[in-house]
Image (cartoon, rainbow, N blue to C red; front, top):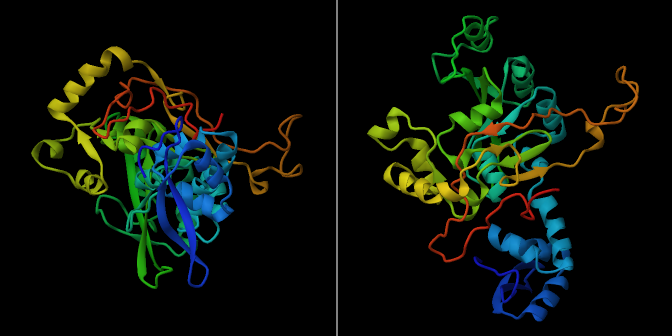
Length: 373
């Protein structure tokens, strides 16, 4: 339902009707005016309000949430459900809270298509979960994955078997095998087979990627394009180029590798099948030169051009008073990994782009209703 206007609210509105054994489905779409549309939405039952927002694209969700105070309150309810990381984790682990505490304790960062799906409210069948971390937390994370039914799979002969006492990420770090251009120390692949709700047997794959640099810096400076420049920690989720990625469905090539010059890599074909258009070569030069005068600036992680979601603190995340010696002040404060702001020498290509659909992207990212302030 694209293009819903928050100022006019002459929107396409979803009305619901009961069918058969109490199931709800989309019955009809009506063109309604401002007052009538707002009144009808506010009278919907809770589950139908959630369904109403789920039928909207992200731009429409943003616009509708700005229409009135009451609709914004409905949106806040929807936001906490639609962008709840624990709902995503439960598809991979029986105890999502345990996994959240583990990624907090090991300073783990999740990225790749898992976070793209999180922001976009999508599900890509067969996609992996990519976990990035430094050496200190690798052993704890890999051992815990095995307790969850995941089995180590040797997919690349360059990386040693996890049972080996001297693991490959340790060897490469000691031998100083990483570099500024290639900070990868090891990639460990895990998988398990599970029965889905539909009755099919599905394979779930997790990649534990060990890097010799800050995982966030690796995501920002070593990933192939802007669509995957998103990450999640135990505390927050950040998208660096949200307007281009999730509103315009554009991805700008950020790192050219030899394979990109000789053919179309698998990652590009994968995201093109998911509806993304890549901007590179001559098009990238033209787009950059057009926007340089207005959008070239230093960027910071979680600056106002990002989409930044902070996750609520749960009781399980809070230290108890007798858990360890503490000073006055932090006795009941959550123990989270935080990273300092970093200057990014990135040209913000996602702003003010006018796609063919005719509407203009916001000229900012940080004040979108998807964010927490």
